[in-house]
Image (tube, rainbow, N blue to C red; front, side, top):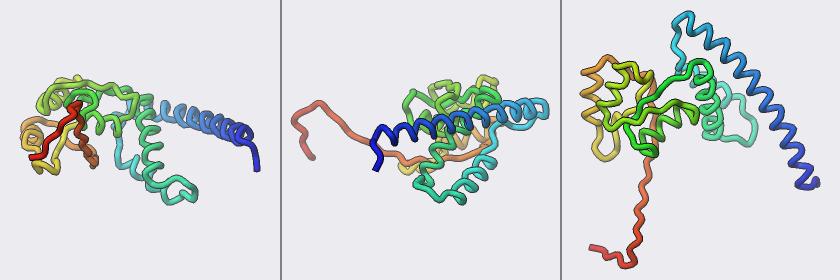
Length: 182
């Protein structure tokens, strides 16, 4: 059995290879971005990302599960899109809200985010060209369909290009020492 230090040296060598390969991938992404900009092709293509994820999952024979593959490659895709063409994403704020979390899960840590105060403001940001993409809730398990979003989809020229399902978990916290049940 090797020592921890020996394992770490092997991991460092693998990390070096991963970094080299990611940079090679990003060089190709930049070229694709140039081609997309001259041809007018959309930068964000969720169907292509799904195709890649499905292919990678079918090839996987290692310790990574499907959620891990999604998490790693969705961030790679997000970085790639930002190298192709940096884009602004409007979301109903504040930062840390569920729509912000959804936006970051789809567009990654490098996304240019615009926090707005309402669902309708997201649509206005899209209409005015302030943002290329907007993230809004369409339905939730408390109230079902989100009427404001549905109204805005009818009122504005924006269209849905992708959907994301999120598990929502709430925690209740207090500094009170005496909590009474009713």
